[in-house]
Length: 312
Image (tube, rainbow, N blue to C red; front, side, top):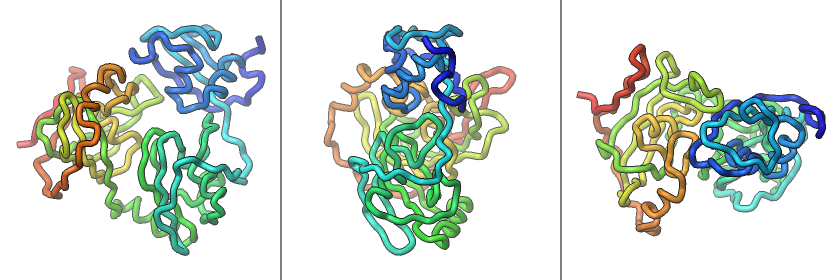
């Protein structure tokens, strides 16, 4: 076997525990699922010694145990400023003019290149379509004014002109953009409509994810239940702030994680699919914009307890 990191330049190190839902999965498959890497890249990292399981170098076919600790050294982003055109299946332009282009981003597509990500990106897809974007921003994310997670689908706006880049960046910074999402979460929220006002920052012990923590960044999420399934709910979500993983973190803190989100405490898919599949084509009802009283979350203090309740 090659020595540690012999074939890949060292980059960002991710440390994370193996969630219960991935117990029994092959090392390379689990890394692919957890970090959004291709199976080939994950297998290469394992073979190159860039992966440790409980401090030891595994083989790619080893099976993981729940609670084991993974350390993955990712390769750095290539320094080339050129964005390689790549046809991205499912990526569609829904609006375009001289200043902006709005795309419908599918799941499995990143906004731009990042450490360890070898899959498709919005920028590579736009390049394949012949769309010229703004040159403002870092080389690997020129024209990008906001992002959606790899596992999130939806509309993204990308700047084509330098003026649009400046205006949009300012708008997102000043929170004048109305950001709406739909999510399926476990269980039934109480109250059905409300506001989560809880600070978010890096998780105190797991640097690969985020959490509601004392002293974190101000974060506000408004939600409204649109449809109730036997053990899950479809919710309309409006963000006042745009923290990393904000929707996932806030609903996890409410003990209603997004369905399938194993990183933030969701049940394994086998337990949640029947609940969601009960009405797979249920219509989404129109929802009003009346805001209910906020739900305030206590953050871990000396007691380490977290409480959630409607504000009085």
